[in-house]
Amino acid sequence: MARQLEIGDRDRLNEVFGSFIDETIGIVARQTRDTVSFAVGSPAREALDLVGADDLAATVIRREGASALGYTMTEGEPELRAAIAADARARGISADPEEVLVSAGALQAIDLACRVYLRPGDVVVAESPAFANALSAFRNHGARVVEVTVDSEGLDVAEAARVLRRDGLTPRMFFIVPNFQNPTGETLSDHRRDALLALAATYDAVVVEDDPYGLLRYRGTDIAPLAARGSAAEVVSIGSFSKTFLPGLRVGWVIADREVIARMAAAKQTMDSSTGTLGQRIVLEFERRGGAPAHVAKLREMYRAKLERGRAALEREFVGTGVRWNDPDGGFYFWVRLPGEMSSATLLNVALEEGVAFVPGHAFTISRDHSAAFRFSISGPTLDRIDEGVRRLRRAFDRVAS
Picture 1 (cartoon, rainbow, N blue to C red):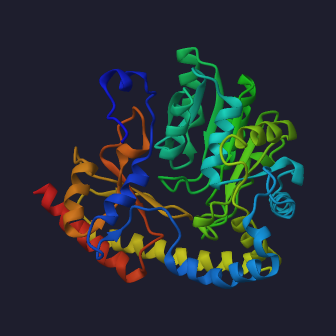
Picture 2 (picture 1 turned 90 degrees about the vertical axis):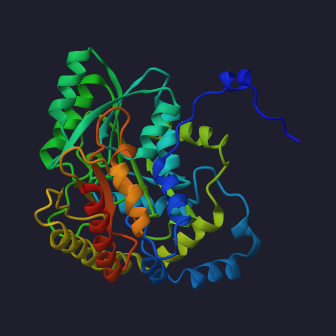
């Protein structure tokens, strides 16, 4: 039987940072089955059903047998790397298959970037509020995270420049979710993308561009990726099939210079040797059938309706309350701000009693105060459940406000 940790043992352990977002999955799972969850930023069940995963998996296993369940190259299946590179070139990113590594989701790609670029004490400039799991990855690698405000045009690049000058800091990395950012849903504007690249170049810092939501635009015009702008700054481009295909397969990618890919592959060999072969080949089978563009078009239609329904429900239920929210052009999220000094963590506790869940603002920061805001994700519930969930949220709000 394993012995319990003594005080001295705990002193020798490194602090490890996790994610309140992922903890929320467990919190919601412990509630009644009737709970409406605006907490999890994962694809809708009906979106997963559109894929035809049973047929895809059966086809791969019938055709390829046990080889589909064996190890594969650390860098990923060659045909899948070629397909990812081709899709990147269609978006203006110069890439060939040797500049692609297939990762176990975008999160592993972020961790690999940390392993390759960061040493303890290095400065990372990140959005605030930010993707919580990325913040934890930076901290677990010993980085100093400088949080910079996100507004209606995304990361405030001028603020980042001021903070770096004021504090005499030399950043090693800028981390950005440019499209329909997690958690706010905001998009980095065109002119700020150029400004961010110029700022990074002055410090010889790498820009890590994590873009899992870029295909999920419902209005407006696509903005060229940072990696497609021909900047002097080094850009590492990260993506994932998790938001537009099957998240449980854990298939993502990173595009970078070949030397960087080689170093990431070496680091990955100490983590999982290779991303799951079956998952990669299921993605490949879907790509071979040519269904991806039509599938993404269906997703846009589905999530556009959900975003519009969420906006209408918030307007109907919270008019005159002082609650505010933004107006994203795509993705899964609204960023909701509460009036006065109301705490989103307190509201969550009451909301769970009413049968509705979200992620409070403190989950998306290290030192900034986002306690009076929360992330509201429309991806999971059906249209009718969005209406019901917002009604429950209003009941919880009234209880806290009274």
